[in-house]
Length: 286
Image (cartoon, rainbow, N blue to C red):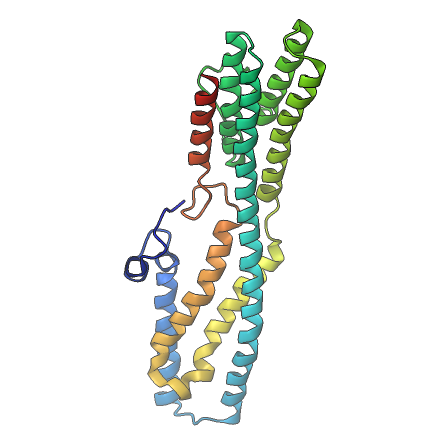
């Protein structure tokens, strides 16, 4: 995730960060600029067409379709941002439940080795969830404390290990039945958060919808020079690529934030959140 000062307008305008959509779109913008110049040259110099009703109708079509495409892009961006924000809420809930669970373990005055088990297990659930959402295998340090099988759902294995340890402590008399219910509810919240993150990760925007928007933008921009050449002349070479930049950038941003757990510049700071959980749990249980 990019950390920035929202009041620094000068940097925003004149600096092209690696996450800026301009870096991704400039080859296509140059191609569209060349195409626009070619269309303008044919219509103005080669065929020497005059502004006819046919061309006016094309311009009217662009005006009508411009409203439609703007509504589609607004819906697309809002839907993706909702997924991004829900992911942030789930990670915030993971932080809170990790702290609360650690505080309860601390208050129980358990044997030192049991406290160390949870000091390892609680933050390692966050790390395992992070790697799970990124479709990577997780190998934690001190893995002998919680044994996991690589081929299985590793966050579930870690949560199951913590549940099993709580039941074992209950049988030994360190935890009462009432305390077990409260602590088990905290571990259940870990799996609920994991399920919510998996729902975001594994349910992208429908394929047909995403393809339709991309084709719509491409055809819309590609036909702009035909209808606007007599109004704008060779200024099309600058204006049409800018329109492409605006429309395509909204789609690219939506694509990036709809899966907020990856490595893209605008994704959530999952690594930082996991590190903070580990730091805070160590402070609570040390």
